[in-house]
Length: 402
Picture 1 (tube, rainbow, N blue to C red):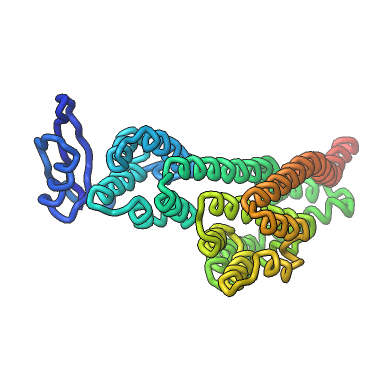
Picture 2 (cartoon, rainbow, N blue to C red; picture 1 turned 120 degrees about the horizontal axis):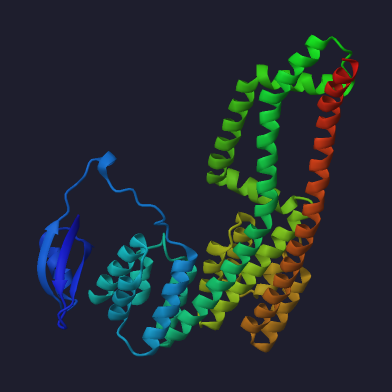
């Protein structure tokens, strides 16, 4: 249940907000732990569905977690108690959904839970990697430094996502606009022009006849294309959510021409960076591999990493296990792991692997971006030329005859 509260700090500052608790007494008990004078606690009235406030933009983003981690690292490094530090960050957070999670975290820690166990209660916000890193920080007694590493890792991950998404936005928008115009032309414009051409009685060129036939086909069988579109949307939305569908899609992505190698480089970079960060934080190898597998984002690589973990627990080295997957793990990756294992600096070797693949990914995105733009221009020019030849020239010929 949600309760509204009003309280006054020792300095006289009035605080208001919401708190979740099983009862009013439990809400008062939680608030008293923050050393405030409670002036009001009352349960919020339940509203009908249509009367409830619609929350917009309440998704907890990667940027929210990055900012929280960076600030928490600084506060813990300044010897601020964890529960107080987290509560203070909750007051500064503008995202209501994240604010509720932060307040609950603070309450859990005040009740005696460790940081890692408190974070583990919210797996929809904090990944296995995040929780594993916090646990390593608790074991080594260096949570602030580990939080810095987490922030650095999240920044790199955010950079990767932004880079890939940014490269795809322009061509996606161009194609979306093109198909919108294409549908409008074939369903509205061309049928009207067709009437004019037929009434004129002139000989219709083959290209114009082809365009008219395509337009008629779309008009007659529009329902078929609508059902096909809905079917494809449902298929690509629900099928990947099944275990078999996800595995098949992940395997297919790795076999795509040109983009297959890009996907492999992306996953190897992510694997190297995650594993390096976890190992450098003092996380045991087996646990590091398990957390990396959960974060990799591809079932093919997840299975490879989990099999490697199983072999490592039986005494085999990481490099020997990874060598069995030459199609997915490159010789360079394996060689750098061998060097790291021999020198005892596996974390540093993996960082070098990550930097190499980061460069490869950046170069690929830059190259593809520079190629896609002229290809799109040529494609659009050809389509416009065909439509011009098919429609404008016959109309011009009518005007000439007249």
